[in-house]
Length: 236
Length: 244
Image (tube, rainbow over all chains, first blue to last red; front, side, top):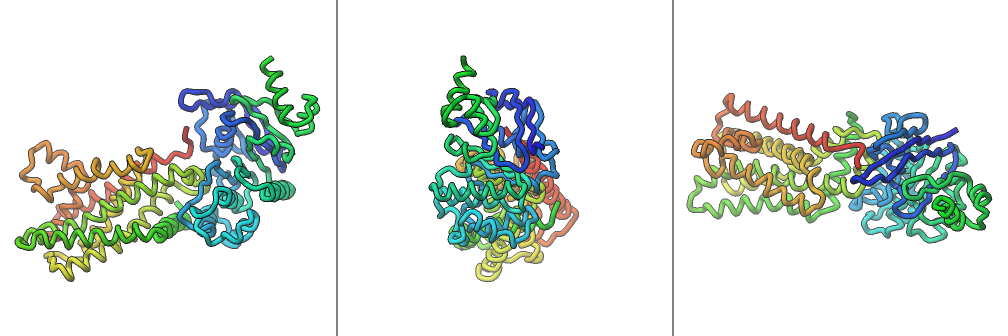
């Protein structure tokens, strides 16, 4: 079963075609990686899925509803690329506000703070935190209310390897509990941590499949090489 | 509309203001200073202070809340928090009403402080009830907030937003009848004055100062309320769930 179905998606921004006739699916209850170089259209695809991107054509269905439908607003957790939290509030004050908006119990706040390992920073003002910590506050907000789908735009940028490993463990634990995760990254070495992959390049889907499938079909040893071979095949 | 979400927004905006004591001190202190300055400036002509003291008291909140709201909302647009909110179960009116309530609370504190100073220490006097002056001040603050929310959509940076103050607020203050009576304005200036909401805010304050609560006063209040509703509706129209 697919949590997200994108068919023939066209997005034009500022006169330039950012996504061209893009179709892909994200299986439910998995961690799906959205990979591609900077400028390949990852963020635009993500914004289309959460329903904040104006689209020129095609269809995006999320959890069986059209993307951006009112009924999805407390079922989808979204983490933007730049930390979208209030810098002048503390970690807990931010979470308290968003929990009220979502209608999540205030008791959930402690759990999401621990999930992103920010217990020690809970009462600190967000603007005083490091970039990586701020990103984790933003991630904690997305986790509020146990959404069925989590759409995370580069959640692990700027994190040390230990935290990165912890977050990927968290993502898989959530997927194990039935949550669907779509996680974007421009770092290929994160691809192996995903159940399935969407490879994006120049606003089009280069390939879709599990990491093992992509290695086998391209006869590449690692995914970086697989990506290169797919690009070569495409341009040949 | 959801009361829970509206209250959450108002609460959050006030919490942000509390975190910024310098802005708070400026918002509350500057109007008091200006009112005292006005009194000293016209020390020799106390009737001038009596004439402009009350209208200025009522118009300060309009100016400050316009500026504070437009910058706060602009930040919401540029930092991505607005985009996140637009994916959540939050109505556009919840957001706007939350802002309006938060800044009305701040305006009430501001109006109370300036009133206490002007009526208590500076010897300002009005013929009508003083609480109506304070109430009109809060109403004007809500009007300023509503206009600020709307106009923040047309600024990409804080520099631009600050420029809306001389562009949008100053002409209204010049043409509202405070400096030159509307009767002695050129006809075309009076037509412009007729179209600006602050004209009615000033007129209501002038009526309160003179204790003439006639139909004209009622019409002034109706126009202020109408302008708030129109500005909020326009503001809601600039909040798009889907953007480029």
